[in-house]
Amino acid sequence: MTQRPRHSLTTRIWHWLNLACLAVLFMSGLNISNAHPRLYWGQAGFAPSQAWAFLPRFPGWATIPGYYSLSAARDWHFLFAWIFALALLLFMLISLVNGHFRKDIATRLAEWRGQAIWADIRAHLRFDFHRGAGQYNFLQKAAYGLVIFIMLPLMIFTGMAMSPGMDAAWPWLLDLFGGRQSARSLHFLCAWGLFAFLLLHVALVLLSGPLGQLKAMVTGGKRDETP
Amino acid sequence: MKRRNLLAAMMAGMAAGCSKLADTQPIATLLDRAEDWHRSAHRALASRQALAREFDRQDISPSFRGNGTLDPATPAYRAAAQNGFADWRLAVHGLVGQPLSLSLEEIRTLPQRTQITRHDCVEGWSAIGQWTGPQLGIILDLAQLSEEANYIVFHCADHLNGAAYYESIDLVDAYHPQTIIAHRLNDAPLPVRNGAPLRLRVERQLGYKHAKYLTAIEAVKDLSGIGQGKGGYWEDRANYQWYAGI
Image 1 (cartoon, rainbow over the protein chains, first blue to last red):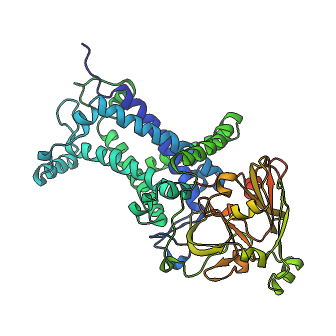
Image 2 (cartoon, chains in turn red, blue):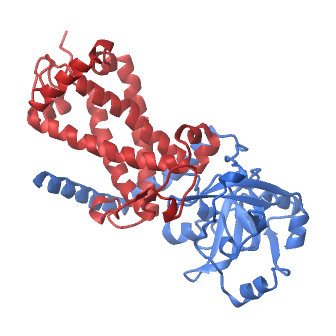
Image 3 (tube, helix red, strand yellow):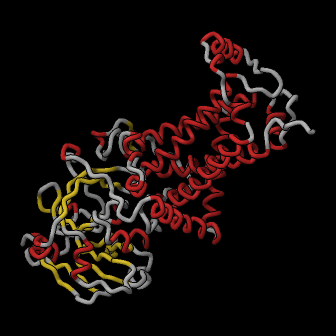
């Protein structure tokens, strides 16, 4: 029997497809944000006096398309939202079946102890990421779990809650987030949260042998090959 | 700092690449096609009659923002407004058995629906208001809508950038219980900036579908002969999605 690769084919395909989707969604989202650069809480809001946040105008190099076009940005955003959401759903289903979540992402109750978490944080601050062959440490599991199960689904559902058609189909979306404008604010905040995750994720890859890490996420790598 | 520049350069590259891709035929077609997926998905998830949320009086926005045309400002419109729109007529024509020309008084004596709903602009903001008017379905039944009709087109008194504003919806939304021809906002006649004397409310779609300053309702088989053929002013002019439920 051949050894299980460090990253299964499903994980690798989803990882890169998801990156492409998030890049298009984030950049077209910044273009959409330029159409009305204020955020509100609650069901409604349109006036500066109601806003809790005044957003900067995002420059063309950061947006899709590279010039202001709300209609084109919406087309890109909604096309890639489909790909993103269906790919995430498929990845979740396969990872439940093949044990990826159970073996690699799920944390045990014993790991949620202050002392153990603090020790993990201190190890990270020493740039010591070794936790046994091919195993994720607690902070990694928690971060991936947070992104996959909380933040990415939050992007999908807050996005749906902004759609008047979806609100009629699934009125609970409005109750869940406390209104369309709250959903819009959460959508924006979570998008930047994912951007922060990207920066941290890339920084940690750079600090832990970037070539080996990249190779493993492309070819699969070997379990015993701890970077 | 270097990494930040690299990231910015990558984003700029993607922005440029996507803009180029969008100009190619297959990608443009795909981007257009996705609109049909949204409509099909919404129609599959929601029943035809599924209602947009209705709010309480205390949820009504302190003022109701106007957008697009805030005053048609033509001599004819100005004169009509001066006159309290006493002579305003709403024509109902096209694929109908009984063309109509309704006065405001006739519209006010039809069965009325009052609803407090959220108005969502495509730009991202929302306002909540209370609207009153007859259901569009009642007017279409009165005009004996032909079985050949597939779309309802709304003609308006206002011009934006030199072109007449118009919009269109299909029969699912035309016969939706909350689709009304509103003549009142928040217990007062419709203000000029919000579409006096008559505007469409189609509550499961974005604001640009809610045509203001209505002069005529036309039933058609397809949209190709109206305006530039994409079903609405913003659809024609800036390629906005015809289905604006998202």
